[in-house]
Amino acid sequence: MTTLLWGALPYIAFVLLVAGLFWRHRYDRFGWTTRSSQVYESRLLNIASPAFHYGILFVLAGHLIGLFVPMSWTDTLGVSEHAYHLLSLYGGTAAGVLTLAGIGLLVHRRRTRAPVFRATTVNDKLMYLVLLAAIVLGMVAKLAHAGGDGYDYRTTIGPWARSLFTLQPRTQLMEGVPVLYQVHAVVGMALIALVPYTRLVHMFSAPVQYLFRPYLVYRSRDPKQLGPRPERRGWERTG
Image (cartoon, rainbow, N blue to C red; front, side):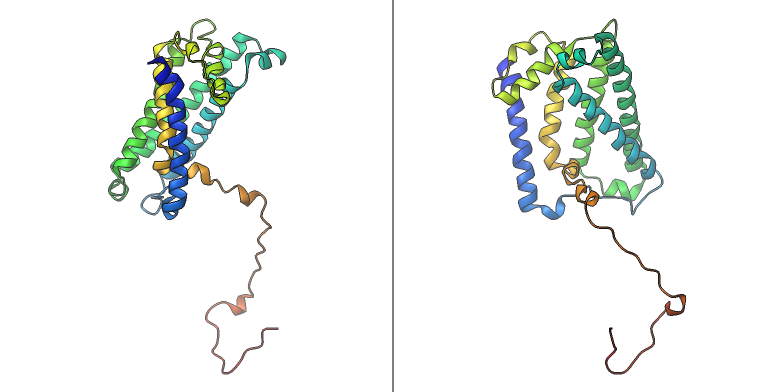
């Protein structure tokens, strides 16, 4: 079971992620979208969507730092274990609460706005369920080991996650990890595998090119020219 969960499952999730992205781009390119429902309701969406997106970005950044920044790096920067724990605890909790608030409003909106509810698919419900489970389990695991300097996952889960990239997973590091962290990791891998097959696929379509494209030039029209143009016979000069 240890080999299956911590040696095979991460690669299965990665293969499903890559294969799903390829399939969606090759055969469902026009479905590569969030399927926006803003046309049905925008007041709640304007609150819920930013809360969710900013929250999930902070959650993702915290996971990347916690898993892939070795303890030796923070020690070199002079960040003590206690200071790191407090930053992780309070910062991670705040990001989780913001994300949950956003998801809660999004779910409430879908459930109480009839047109939005009719546009909700079984796929959406599964996505919300797995996403909520991953976030709630992460927060519960963190708060359950909040005493002292908390659980030091940077000596177990972090090295295990980094070892996956060398194709030599150190599965033994996960054997003594608290159950809540283990369940959180499994649900997280399931979420990664589901991303290409849900509306979450739009995270890979961030309009980065907008940062580098030329400026769009807008010219105002003469007020006298507003309205329908008079009909003219023959050719018009374009110069």
